[in-house]
Image 1 (cartoon, rainbow, N blue to C red):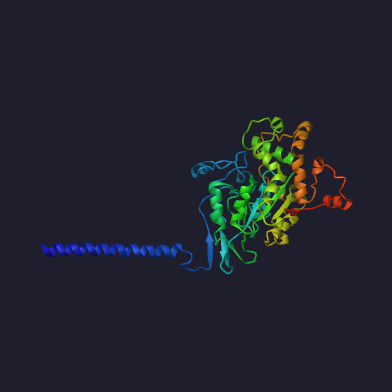
Image 2: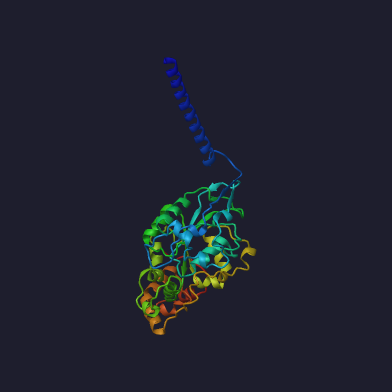
Length: 388
């Protein structure tokens, strides 16, 4: 009996030792295949089997506290957001099909951060997709940098912002090389944030972030916002009446002087901001793209990549074909101009230049010299603010 008990005891301890050995081996194998520092490879490829349309997307709506849909909901129904309405973009494509390959011959580094500043209803969607996909658009991405492509467009708040924070700390996305295959920047295309608090959050993630601020006639911008609510999101509002009482997100996007003042109160240097009039993109898209690349210290595209660029071919946020785009009566237009006049004056004083559409907002200064007037009226494509 004692010998049988001893054998059973020996078997029990042998079994425990075998289990511990197998567990240790599993840990070693897991570490080797998951820790990027545990092995070297010539190339690292970032892939994902998640569909682009499965990524939460917050639309540019009059709702600052908009919630993001669940994964299951977005799989069943594509969001009414940007991807759905871009010609040439395969919304069913996966990030795995748009593989980002990083060559280890260039040192890994943190990506340089670039932010849109209140770009909604001023061409931000078009510009975002041109910068990240190239002049060929989403269906035929032609650029290989400097902006990483395939990332969510609008990481404004909540879980999307947390994901953006993680991307800013990821050393596997961008590389320090200057060759044509290097991704060096990530672009936050959030179209609606203009607060001091949001600017501080961005500054906290980088010592030298760059900002792109699209500018548009505030009356046209607010009317575009109202039409968007009706044609894209199904609102049954009377646009003519709603325009007489601007409020919410639409008003905030139209108050561009106030938005720029908020940003200038946080950034260290006004040169971190690039002011881009919306009509400049139509007039000289190549010049705008080159200016943006220079502003963010990125590699300019080769001339053959931009010489046939036509951003108007990217029809984004076009809305429903059943609802006609509503324009305002002259009376309501004047009501809006009166509400936005002082803000436009603030905007021009901060930029130090006049806009092609802003004559209705000016109170001519009798003390201005001829040279000052000429400087303010000269044609310009993009600019940094004149002062902080």
